[in-house]
Amino acid sequence: MDIVIITGGSKGIGRALVEHYAAENYKVFALSRSHEAFDNFTQVSVDLTDISAAEHIFEGVLEQLKTCDISSLTLINNAGRLGDIKHLEDLKSDDVSKSIQLNITAAFLLSSMFIDFGKAYACPKHILNISSGAASSAYAGWSVYCATKSAIDMLTATIAVEQGEKENPVSCYGIRPGVVDTEMQTQIRSSNAEDFENVQKFKDLKESDQLYKPKFVAKRIFKLLTSQKLTSGQTVDLREA
Ligand SMILES: NC(=O)c1ccc[n+]([C@@H]2O[C@H](COP(=O)([O-])OP(=O)(O)OC[C@H]3O[C@@H](n4cnc5c(N)ncnc54)[C@H](OP(=O)(O)O)[C@@H]3O)[C@@H](O)[C@H]2O)c1
Image (cartoon, rainbow, N blue to C red):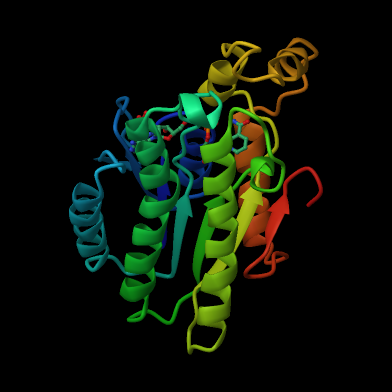
């Protein structure tokens, strides 16, 4: 049985990934705060900014996996938040902290637990971190988002270096999906030019229908991951892959 665990599986890119993997007959575990009624995958309710709850709930998911006949294991760290779009001096500490917990700490924690759990399995094992072009381009108003996505790229690279030395290693990849038509983009377009001077660029992309659809992105990600064309440790831009 091929297993995939997807964080942020309720909406946007994560939701499209859940549906695509389920259609490819994977056993899918989708982690998020909200859910809709669907029966072809397992929905797990968790607020990933609550790190001790995340640890406890992920332990439960891994425990369930012990009963499965596993042929491959994949973790997709997809859940992410922009947080408030404002210059640094106008941000509230609670919002900064939530973005760091979700975008970085949860991905570190789940990756750590996944790697440890995977030691008992010789099957193919992969971690995919959903990054962003913001990891390498500084946008005024997105300091926390840019910094957290940059940290995720380094997590991808360091997992690959650590695992490279091991027997039955976990491969780790990063993907920057491009500009995708999700709630995150709605939030970006609703910001004001004082807080985010690039807002018009994102409005123009939407108006000229240049946003990727989540379904298209999910299909491309699945193809890239299963084609084995990616190099562990690297983060690639979907627009160039
Ligand atoms: N859209 C883009 O243009 C774009 C571009 C580059 C990179 N990305 C990256 O792609 C990933 C997915 O983004 P998206 O555009 O699909 O965003 P989205 O539509 O806003 O979906 C975000 C997902 O994360 C989950 N999530 C948010 N806070 C959570 C929390 N505290 N605990 C658990 N789950 C939580 C949400 O579920 P609940 O609300 O139900 O918890 C939802 O399923 C993110 O990492 C984002 O940075 C997106």
